[in-house]
Image 1 (cartoon, rainbow, N blue to C red):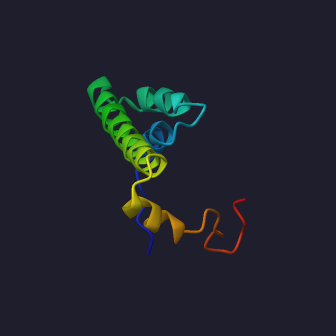
Image 2 (image 1 turned 90 degrees about the vertical axis):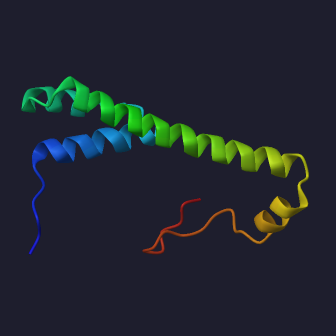
Amino acid sequence: MTAELHPSIVALISLAANIASNHPKQGMCQVDRLRAYGVAPQQIDAVVEIARHIRDEAAQALDATFDATYAGSPVVQEAVAGEVCCTSTASGQSCC
C-alpha cells in the first residue's frame, strides 16, 4: 500500500531539492504551485532557508576537502587515492 502525499508536500519537497541541487529552474514552478495551494509564505520561506543551508553546508564541506587535498594533506590524499572518480549508478549506468 502506497501512502499518497498531498500535492503541496510534493511541491515543498521538489522546491527544496531544486534549491539544494542548484537546479537552473530554481524551483520557481513549485513556488507558483505552492502559492496556488494556499501555502503560507512563511512556510515557503522556511523550506527555502533550510534548502539553502543544506546546499551551502555541502559546498563548504566539498571546498574544505578540495583545499586540504590541494594543500597536500596526507590524510585526505590517502582517502582520495583509494576512491574511484567515476562510478556507475545503481542500475549500472555510467555517469562519465
